[in-house]
Length: 304
Image (cartoon, rainbow, N blue to C red):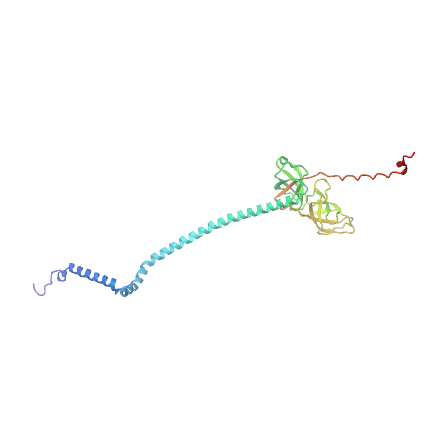
């Protein structure tokens, strides 16, 4: 072989054998592990290596962390929106139930007050629900869900917790028509509670106004006086509230006063009324026995 010809032998054959290098590396690794385990010489090196490798680890894990964070955020947002929708629906249902409970509580209070206010002279009561209101502005009438099958009769009194509501005008088997005291065709005998003056209250066609057109100029009435039923006419017993006087017009050129009053009953608010059977028995006062005439001396002696 000349000095200018390349060496055709493989380079690996010029170094130590592979098995020897493997054995050397294994012995070196075992030695390092034993030294680190017993004397902890490599802790500082590991700390430095971890500090150097941390940016690489963070860069590798960053996309996965961002993806998981975005996925959790979207899932949380969707879950929160779903919970908000469900809670809003539950809140609406609870509010509707609360409104119904409040309505039932108010209804019970009204019915209890009506029964208590009319318990002294009432033989029987019947709660009737208003199912239809007459839309004619000149007719103040309602239809209730009780009729002749329930014992309702014509000219029966209807009340609420605040006063006289009206009376029954027509009766069917399952329903009845009630004319309100504010109807233009209705008249109710009343009495001024403060003075005892009796008159008649007429309906005006407006649910919030009554008219008292038959009071003379010298009548002692003022705004604020209460009107109660006088008991005349046979429909309403005496002493039940009817209304309150609102205005008193005095015109010297007219013989009568112009007096207006407002009904106390909730004519345009009550969802139900109370049909009542009053005790119509009237106890007549016993006549005072006439004084026996004194006997004369002649009677006592039987003189002739």
